[in-house]
Length: 250
Image (cartoon, rainbow, N blue to C red; front, side):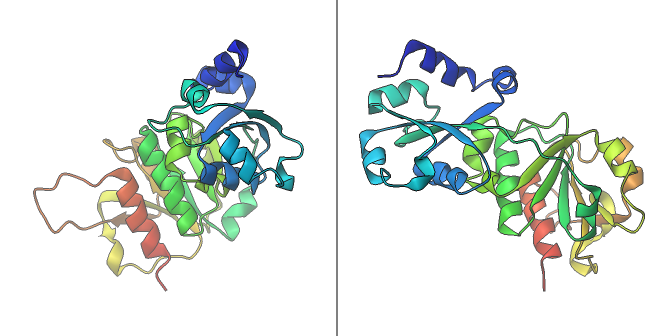
């Protein structure tokens, strides 16, 4: 049975304050937990139904993890899902250090004040699809270990490294030869541009776009043309997907 302290601990991880204190987050569903087990993340505890444990009882990846068999009723007490799905894992938050040399051989995303958990999760998932392994976020962006973000990544959080930085300071340190792209109102049509294989793509806030203090660092000004004059804007995650896909065009 789940103890009161376990329930209190797991539910506390739904809040950023306690994720920071315990340096841990929660992830739910067989696929997501499997992806974390296959990654460099350290899964500390798993709370699962008898069904899940029976299917995975010979998995060597579980040897050093604290396992707790719980009922579906107990799973509902700690789950954030409308329909809890067999398993919940408590996983350590990794500490990544960004090496500036990463910029020499990689296409990376810079996310400027992305606030919506769904957008953040979808952007991480899209980045993973297109082989982008590094994302730098502003300190004001939503916490990627927020349970809603984790679930919406559909496991891609296990394959993309996320860093939080003061973006102005970060961009100041970018070598001159590295192209910095951003979508702006009067940028050049992205479908007609020759794009670099490596560099930085800045994705702006859902409503305000890219912050004014970051605009001077952009060396490649892009825009996504609209075919409907009355359309106000694109969703941030949709815009990110369009831009990234153009960089991966062969």
